[in-house]
Length: 364
Image (cartoon, rainbow, N blue to C red):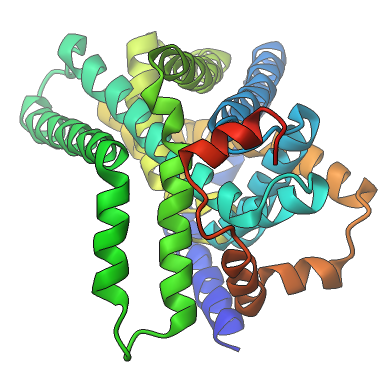
């Protein structure tokens, strides 16, 4: 019941944000602006975004490599299904990917998928912050907006520092994981901590230890950095193409600035892919860069950009969901907390880097 109430509240919040976004717009002008957009550039942006989803699957395969072999086909299908779920139900749809993949590829356990997706989010955050912060070094603020741009620069540099500290922590954890896991085992081995919770925490820490094995090899680390950079380039380019489709005098540097605002706003956990929040932030960043842009034109761009980002995932995701051999009931059971506990508990108690290497070589 709590889940239904939460979804209803988030849905109502999304409705409010959409109302806030469109309350003063002349929708006839918005429609006119959408019709004038270059369809070939929009189509090209969609194709590049499709490539981006494939790159996500390739990077996920690299992240899972220290733990187990996987199928790129199933990783791509799971990625698109997961993003379709995020669009339909909000950020709660994040749980779909670590539960869907083990049903399609039984070599992957839900806990392993969950941990690697956590690393994926860290890499995504690092990439978008680096793109945004480095772009600020060469970015020229609009005339009269130097004061606001100063605050944005401080925020970007602060986020870059936080990301750097996060990677330092992961490096330290990788080097000292046995000691830290042992410390955590002693810390939570108390009567007031349920045994199931203890096993889940330790299992996740061991899976994280195994997943971080990819960072211990500089070649694999560089490969992971390459795929992450390529992925976000495949998101930045469509952002620029959408701006060009509407005939806006924007540079690639401008598109990186707008992408930063769009991506940050997309973490709002409302259904519809952060509906309302995404549109408001994207349109506001456009007007910040060029106050001469009409509000209706900025709104049209934000609507088109939202569709470009999410429409391919919805199409692919619904296709794979419709053609899969997975029942709704089985999927619902996998998403239940009891089953999650069961999956976590079933992990081998000594699972670590050695076992991970064995699994990657086909020994698991």
